[in-house]
Each structure stands twice: as structure tokens, then as C-alpha cells.
Image (cartoon, rainbow, N blue to C red):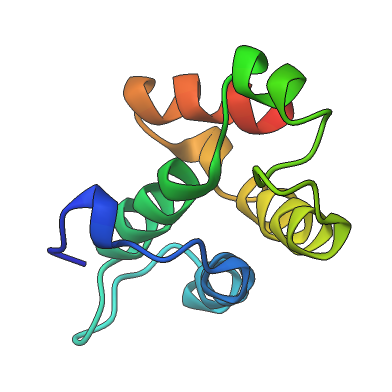
Length: 102
């Protein structure tokens, strides 16, 4: 969680797990993990995966430069999971949400 953005893997499973984790935390922090820490890490994961509109057009709509559909579809799964918690995020994270929704 303290890694620089360039070292954060585009891990859709982390986003799916964060969505599930936050739903069972039910608004409460846990001794091992606060909700904010979970959302902050997931936000970094999203940032490592998200592309702007220009890059999407360059990639033909794919989320990876080599135009493979499998990595694109798994990232979309992660994005869908992140939409369950990004609405409750900070203003900066709301800008990220708009890119995810795009």
C-alpha cells in the first residue's frame, strides 16, 4: 500500500476483494485495516489500470496496448467492483471514478 504508483499491479482481484471487504466491514474499521486504508490502496490499483480517453482511442478501446481482450475484460471486472466504493471516496477519487465510468 505504500508503493509508488508505478509499482502497483493492475490487480482486478484486489478491487473485487476490497468491494467485498468493505461490505462486510459495514462502516466500521478493523484493527488490521481501516476502511480508508482499503479504499486508498484500491484507488492506487485503479490508477494503475485506468486510461484516459486519448489512450483508449489509441488502443482501439482496449485497456492494454497490445489489444488483448482478456486483460481488458478482467480490468473491467475490477472497475465494476470499484464502483461500489468509489462513490464514497474523496474529491480526487471522484475524478478517478469518472475515468473508470468512461
